[in-house]
Length: 205
Image (cartoon, rainbow, N blue to C red):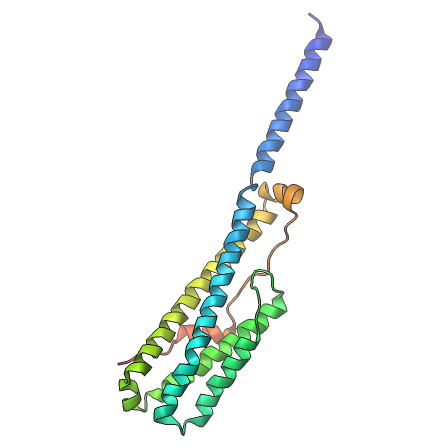
């Protein structure tokens, strides 16, 4: 028996085993990382779309309220100004910096609070509450607020999953070799929005 041949074959076998093990490790995340990033992009779009939908409903709501409570000037102007600030800031949450996300969330939180104050004011006007257009708009806005919360939670989860994929072994090894992706800034809920979410304006008919 040629021991040199045996040792040579043994080394080849070990090399193949190591190569197979590395292949198995690096294959972890080949599909997962791009899929996770796609989920973040989709979730980001849903969040911004729902915020836009809310902003689009506000002018009609303000005009309807104004028809019954025009002297509630301060509250109406507060909503209009908060909407202007919120729509002036446009970001892609999946690519934004922490400061950009904080500014965006602050503006959206201020708009949520302004809407909450407007809903409180409308309680003083039975004729307004009986208006079918107002009731429809109020219902749409409340539904949109709920969809914003759901979409935002999905975005938080998708960013968390993506960040785990690019930083936790073994998929992080694949990322280092093939993708070189970096962690995305995590989304959070601003204090203003937390306060609004904890006590959302009630829809009463």
